[in-house]
Length: 333
Image 1 (cartoon, rainbow, N blue to C red):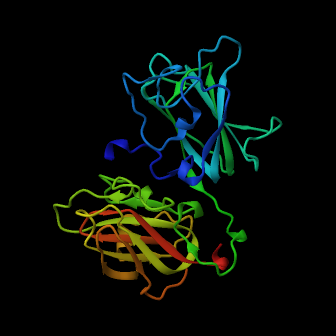
Image 2: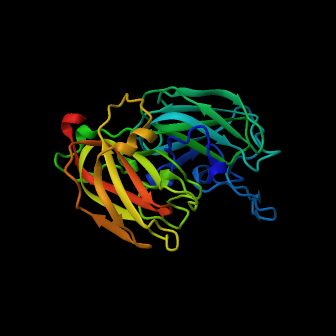
Image 3: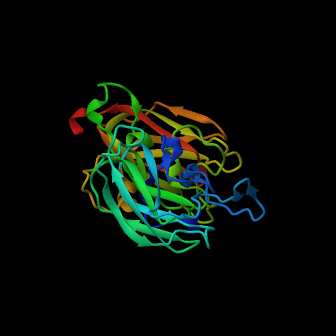
């Protein structure tokens, strides 16, 4: 897990199919289907795998262009978001990768934007290398719904990762409706943790239950005193009434106990969360956990609006999902 940490690890991948993202158009995907471009699994290379069009490749690949122009594909995000960076991944593409690529963005309610749609360039035409990653930071503070990946003139891209944050319009959320304030689709995200050796902290609020043991947050076996922890940021301030902790697929490696602390922080807070969070007030006292089980807790401490939660696990182990259900605080939105 540690070997996969990248420059935008603090942000989530907005182009996840589980968030509803899809590749809705490509000028050409003769050699490799456009849908593979946002497959959440790392790309693989199968030496002897061929299909009716030629060598099977794990990514999006167009045929060799014999006319002027260039190829492109359009990715529709499952929910509007602010982009902070891209990873253009050409893993396993060597003699067939594009020499260059650029990325444009737009906001549209249509599945495929109209030809008259105005696109904003986010990534200038950039040189690519084969079997490598190009990480590109972005400074653009407007929500987008679609991305257009342009390749010059043709070739194959293994994966496109779109790192950023979801911006939900909470003014449209019905008053007094209980919702998962930490849900990925509601803008929640994990900010920091002390260890994620076997599984990413960003798995904790993905929609649905975990599909396997790798689809959760899991720390290494602790050989020193203390315990492991993760800091979570809610999508909006709110009062939590129910906590759900799911240890799906974790059997010989689930934590023995769990507790929660909370804080209400301003959006421009720059304090050291790792140290400060250790003294936050208690939201939920230590509770025992069991293997491969959905635990529901409602015996919580009295609290005002919460923006951040620290989850401590004792002493280590894996948790698949955590849901923090409650009512958004309209006055704080």
